[in-house]
Length: 397
Image (cartoon, rainbow, N blue to C red; front, side, top):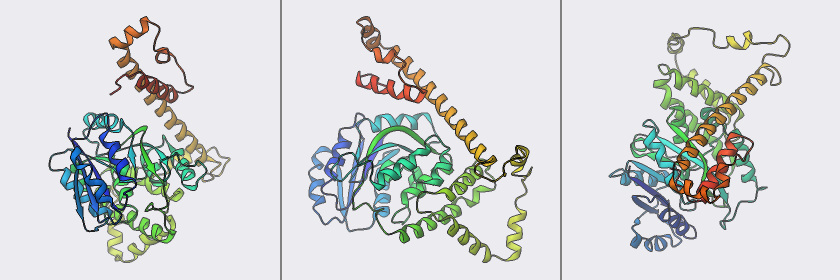
């Protein structure tokens, strides 16, 4: 599959060279690298022009905004590329990002959008101070690792940035970036999650820069208002399919329910107020028709809560039944993650073990880490094996 890396650039002369170098040094090269400078005033076009001799396609436009620039880049890429990887001009890819991510699209025909884990860096490209407010936020966001994506996305935009988007070009053409200032990435990612067309490669394959000029660095009011607008837009976009798609409805319910525990700028009470105001604008007959349309109800929706109640703790208390249900769900998710990690570890061990390089090396006592069982959990064992295999030069794709 052909892939284009697209880079919107605006006033990032100090960073965009590093961004481009990280793309050009990928272990699996991009088929096209396309950059649009969105009216920079800091000399960014001069930096970009120095890369044209290395095959980077550069154009300059009057300032149009991030969402419009991204949409124009997608259209350019879609002429001959099935996949698009986005990179903001102040972030960088780790060397094997494209190589590690692209096989998922070959394996999963329904996959539309993919993200990865990432590292945080500061203005100077150094590891971000772990005690900074942004680092603490990301630790909180990724403490939900292993939960259902819909629930996780309801709590926060854990992929964090358009730099963490690799997508099919036809999906991006059908779902163009919206004219938000802060949330065009969140809308796209949430929609893909709710449609069950999202995947996560749980490896750090991106370096995300946190600095004073990040778009997200602003007063709370604009963020809160736009977040509410985004949720309303998302509900409207999904509404036509919710009634007839049970899986979508279940994920949407998880997403909305998790929003009450959001660590982002989502005001759940404000959202319910907005939905109430929308309902107030409908006639009584229209509201009755909506209620009557729920004709696929086969049982009481919360019956399991009562049937499983222990007769002692309050059924809705966090320390009672609902808390126990949360604990059971967390245990279930942990078991799923361990099973997935164990299967992947078995696959990689078989892949490496079948190579002549491994067989020859073992004759001389090499690759001891690859045959060890270091790590307490299947996930730790998998990561240790990956690290050792890559260090020893094995291809894990």
